[in-house]
Image (cartoon, rainbow, N blue to C red; front, top):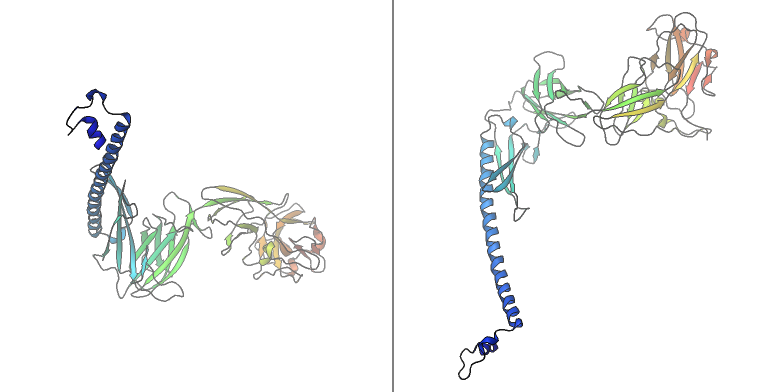
Length: 458
């Protein structure tokens, strides 16, 4: 600084320096750096003050928006229609995002979207008490994105929804991933079909509520939203569950429901006839889904629930007759264990083609118009699973003298009669000498059966 003063001749007596000599470049650069540092600090302070002021103003507006949303919720005329609602508000150049969520409170420690109640085999829980409403407000350019403005309240219904002498049916309709299905129709009627039919629809969370229900057992039926094709985990479009309502309590009825996928199943049995009533089994990590049939159509189109882990498709009723499931045939001294077909996947709204092999046998020397019936037989053969329930499959009439039929895995007797709907007996059984074109060693002459075994030789 002294050198600068000397240069400028300030405070000196005697001869003055040459005023035209000016400042050196280094002095100018140093002065600019000092000015820049001071200016940056001032500018940062001003910007921080502006940011804090703007954020404080926005937070105050957000607080008012949250309070306004709480007031609107409290003013709702129908608490059952008070659901989740996102909204966007632009004020003073700021964009605010308001999210309202709501859940039923059934006891001090439980908050559920659809409430909770009694289910088969469980203890009684309290009925719906009140609804918890949670509001969260955020805005674009928040200083602290993890610190939204929140507000909560509890809302009691204006009218009493629980009656000590009546009950409530709480219905939850969700996909396998837990997403609620809106606008599905729910009906409930006494299991003996007496009384009026109770009806409601699900809200945005997939919840439906039937209030002040007389005690008793009800058939609760779920129906597709308009214009949609939904099925439950067993492929049923309008599933029915039983709810038992007791006075002063709630009964919960959960449905797993989703947009159907389509499996186009082709049974590979060239030249063979399928039974009119042969079902199709879909095996998975859950209970077997069974698809009945009343025709010999091939291929068959099935609307299925789009489980992410897929299905194994087999012919026949593997739930009643384990022999229809090739994976249940165990290893014997001469044969390897059975192997299931590959898993197939079905996505919502997508058609997937599946081909399943069937075994076939020709029945010859038929005379006149005859009806053919195949009846399952419990075979003690090593490694073959038994049928818990006898299976009977009926084929269309034939008068050609010969007919080739296709059947699921297992051991079968073949019967014939000139009348449809007959009961197979020893008198109607066809002798093994009339069987042709069956797999090697499949025909047993001693008991007049044919065995379709999915296993290969060791």
